[in-house]
Image (cartoon, rainbow, N blue to C red):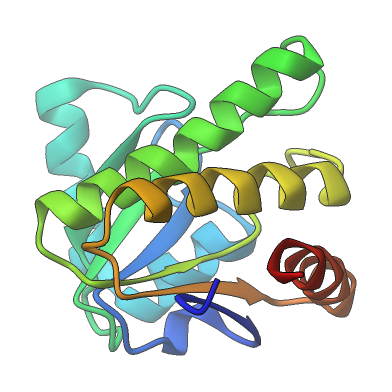
Length: 176
């Protein structure tokens, strides 16, 4: 799909409508991409997350919320909470992970953002098998983009070579 582009690099440097953060349910920052986004964006992101928590509580797995991007070049950050592998059945984990992508894209559309950059949600400390997660991600975004043409450009931003190679291989199969 020509709207999908694969990049190996740092998601915090993406000049897009929204960068998606693989957040934890507290929304208060953490390790991996979550920590990198909070560091790069500065205290404005944490303050916005604290306001969301005060109004709505923790963010449930599979759901998404939107904040400022602070000092990052993106316009907004969409925080989504991926499943922790082994806490649900494999089928339920797949469903929750797909919801992360769908709900993030729906928020982007709602806020009239036309470009979105996704990290590899749940594949770090949350332990989701990388190839399985990539298949779920590609299927979820492809289905969304087929049904809604508001998003003009979607990026999968892989920090590590293993995820990049997985996505590259799977996207080639999808496009053939």
